[in-house]
Length: 331
Ligand SMILES: Cc1ncc(COP(=O)(O)O)c(C=O)c1O
Image 1 (tube, protein in one colour):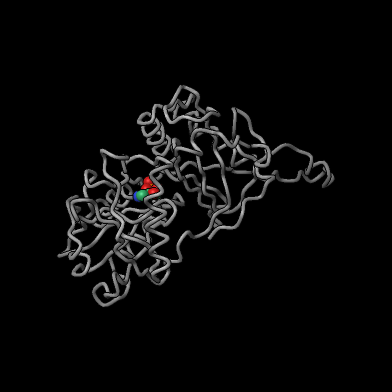
Image 2 (image 1 turned 90 degrees about the vertical axis):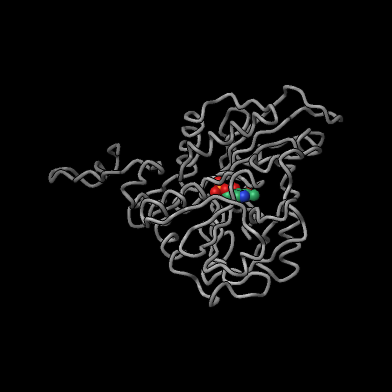
């Protein structure tokens, strides 16, 4: 679990860059009582080799955020491109040289009692140093939850609505208390939907299979990246369809995908090994491809990454200038 954030971090709130300790909301804020907020999760990966920080698909995340906000009629007065620029500036101001999780949050901000919404909206973008969300290096043990995934006609799972994450919190708390690393939720039809904070893929009979977007899942951006990588780089047949619970017990490989979890292999489900109980070949390949893509190392996926730090050219010291003069030169 990540530790508490440094109060001196710079965040974007109320249209300004301010220290985290100054970005405060009141106790009567509508979203705090009724869950009327929409959030995002974006990764920026630090690449030691290239001395560079790469934002992973920020434009797609901000496009999804704005669309999701539309469901709750929350207005974010900036375009996805402007939000990307705000985020790049935020990362630069914090001078991060490590991997980062970016958390945009838009919410109903009226300070009053009463569930009906109005037009008072606010948004913030916070960026924090962030390592692994789940330790999945050797594979996870996942458990099918007794909690069902929320239905589209109750709270749409395709939107990252704050209140909807009570569903994920209940399932993941239960899973951990029952000794599992992560929960897998079924939808009301009894089909596999997704993990508490991630999408799900299985390999069965040579095909990569994931629940369709109409199965009450978040339309994950990592899911989309994996589909593209699997088809283009591995030539795999990718199928989006309903998955039965018992297929989890018979599949050849299983893995979870998400901005926070990355590509997380599952080697046991409900106390049953997935195949031999080891990480499968396809999962390993996808994990490596995703790693490379998110650090700008895959030419075909360069479109996904936005470099944050300008490449700094250290000036060559002209032979007749003293060292202090060179240090003072702008880079
Ligand atoms: C419920 C749920 N499903 C799936 C995902 C994966 O989505 P993405 O890959 O866009 O992070 C997330 C995380 O954002 C999530 O919270």
